[in-house]
Every structure is written in structure tokens, then in C-alpha cells.
Length: 317
Image 1 (cartoon, one colour):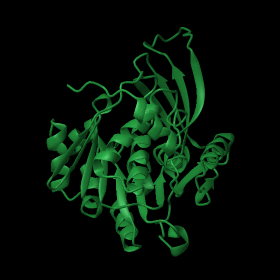
Image 2 (tube, helix red, strand yellow; image 1 turned 180 degrees about the vertical axis):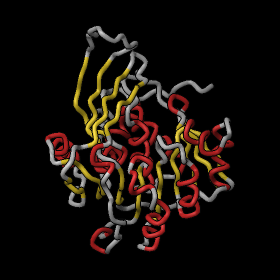
Image 3 (cartoon, rainbow, N blue to C red; image 1 turned 135 degrees about the horizontal axis):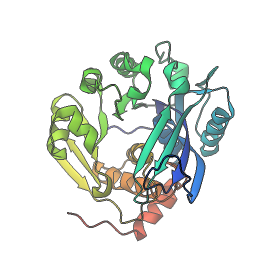
Image 4 (cartoon, rainbow, N blue to C red; image 1 turned 90 degrees about the vertical axis):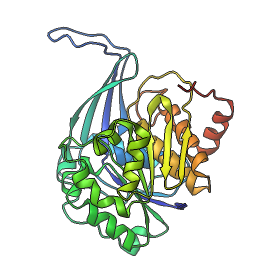
């Protein structure tokens, strides 16, 4: 199995405005809430922040706007040790999401793409300067980047030609093209992350295990199906692994899947087995969902490992 010593991460950078709790919408009224917070979000940013905090060298490819939201996002990423020298600052507004969270931790996302619409106007050049010190390329939801999704397979092919192993986190496809754009990438993807709903839409198969195995048949080397409160499945030829979630209170699930991916890659980078990486990723996600925002609850690698030793696993069904 691959061992990413350093990660080049590509994906969206978003300013999240998290509002909680909102259990119903009543227009032409006022609703009092417990919290309205400004947090770092976006698939690329959240995964990169998690990786950096967990001690993995990470360089982020993305874009922010020339506004205070962009300044906030970059400062937050730098605070974790993420290399943002290749993040473009464009003359537009930073992508922004209002995340409305209910009492159960479920969320409704209201998204303004901002610079995500015009980011990556040119193909990514995997130059020696860009990839120096890195061994792995993580593609975090190219569906959210309109100009990049049309070159997704080309991008993965170029990353592999530069000597990088590749992981892809599917994310949500608002255009509904799903496998049409992802499919050509799969034979060049060492590790694919998808949540249960995404795996079902991609394959048309209801059972998450069978859906994950179908994605392996379509070319992905290893498939990780994220199951939320049920933990996760790790599937590849001849291997089927399950890892339990942790029994923790759920405050906000926004970005937990991105942090999960960061945790999984960080554990692999330290030589963990697939089983160990899956359990560690579940722990990172569990820390994420106990606070508002994707990254506010994350800890260092050592602190996360210590938390795992005392944490209670959720009952399996």
C-alpha cells in the first residue's frame, strides 16, 4: 500500500458561516440560535488543514478571493503549517457556504462558489518545484471546481506521470454527471473515498459494500466507503475491512468526511495498515463532529492517538 510522505492537495477553499441549531425554517420571522461562527471550510482546505495538523507535509492548490474571507482562510491554513504558496488570490469573492445545522448535527449548505468558478483556468503543471518533497496527490472533490472537473482524468494522469500516487475524494456532484467525469480517473486512482450516498449514486447499487466493490471493478485500487455513524468500509481485491465509528455527541457533521480523508492519509504515511488507518480516520472524523466547523475540534497525531485509547466505540448494527 502507498505511504504518502508528503501530500499535494487540490480542492476548494471556502469560508463557512455555521449557524446552529435551526430545526425548521419559518420565513418572515426571527429565529434565535446558539451559535453563528466563521470557520475554515472547503474540501481541499479542510483536508489540507487536517493533514498539516497531523504532521504531514502538505501543499495546497486552490484559490481564494481578494477579500477578508480569503485572508481568514489563508491565515487559518498557515496556523496549522499548511504550505499555501501555490494558492491563487483572484480578483473575485472567496467561495462561501452558510451551513445551517439542526439539533441532530445534520446540515443544509447554502453555497456561493465565488472564485471556484474561475479557478484553475489552466491545467496543473506538476513541475519538480511543485512536487518537491511530496509523494502523493490528493484530489478533493473536483466536482466543485467547474474548470478543473473537465480535465479531471488529464490531471490524475499528469500527477502519476510526475511520480505521485493518487487519491480522490468524490464529494457531491451538483451537475449530476457523477461517473461520467469520475469514471476515466478510476483506473489511475490508488485510493478512492466516497460516502455511502455518493457510492450508491455512482454505481446504482444500494448496499455500500457491493457499491464499493463495484468501484474497485471499475478500476480504483482501494475504495473507502464512509458510513457516518456506522464507521467505514475499506475494500480492494481480496480485502474487505470494516472499522467502527466512535460513540460521541454530534454537534456538526460539516466537513467531517474531508477530515476523515486527511486522517486516513496521515495514518498511511506513518506506516499504518489499512485497518489501522481506517480506525484512525474514524477518530479524526469523531473529533471533527463534536465542534462547529470542520476543523475546530482536530488535534495533533499524538493527541488523536491518545484520545482513541480512551474513547468508546459505537455499537455496531
